Amino acid sequence: MKKNSEKEVKLPSYVDYNIPYLDNNFVAFKEALAFKESQGDYTVINTYGYLGKYQFGKSTLERFRIYDGDAFLRNPELQEKAFIALCKVNKWILRKDIKRFVGKTINGIKITESGILAAAHLSGAGNVKDFLRSNGEDIFEDAYGATIQMYLRKFANYNVSNIVADKSASV
Image 1 (spheres, rainbow, N blue to C red):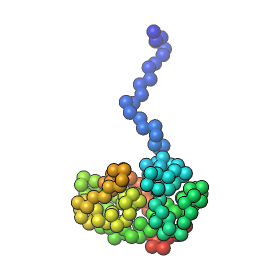
Image 2: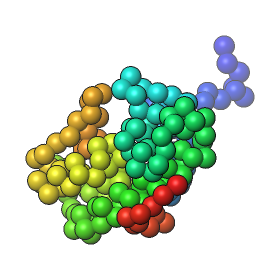
Image 3: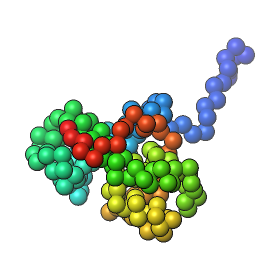
């Protein structure tokens, strides 16, 4: 039996303890995306051979002249640099689409710059262009069932303005 001086603490019905609170800046964006991709694990390789914290494919790594997957997995600094470089390249490839579609709604999803960059990380910039330009009719889904729409929604409204579009970004 409780004494009158003891108060019952009521917790909210649902709290997501798995996702740390961060501002909506670029660091929060990349950490949220990393958590979705690999739970933030630099050393993970998925069943399809995608590598590291951000789950890079070998062809994407080769674009940045990274050829040794084992060395890449052991180098968190290189993984971070590769992620930033990929964001810069994707922002350059998608610059016209960002200008044209940010603020519009497609399939009930408000399009944001960070959502577009996250979707490009999932599916490649070309698939994002196809999705946007088809008004959401051309839908990409990866082998695990993740879609462009999921990433557009989940990673919306982060401030990624510090990422400068750069066609020739490198690590």
